[in-house]
Length: 99
Image (cartoon, rainbow, N blue to C red; front, side):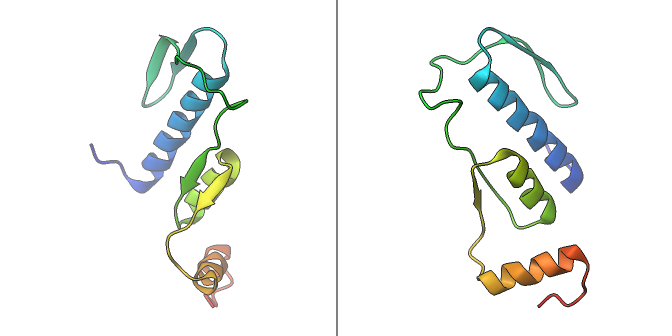
């Protein structure tokens, strides 16, 4: 299935929320979203790490950075230099320099 970029971020938001709910909720999880519906879902065994295992996300777009800042413990960048990341950040912030 193919989703447009913005829809992929909405899908990821929903999936991360579901996963964290499954890891942290004692008892069944019910969820009704745009992409997924769960009724009485649970995970066994429960994670040993509390409240849940370290969560990693990655990506180079501003949306990916925002999603990662909201949900992850570690953000994975692609193999770009720090200068390239700074330039991308400046472009995303709208200063126009990109350098």
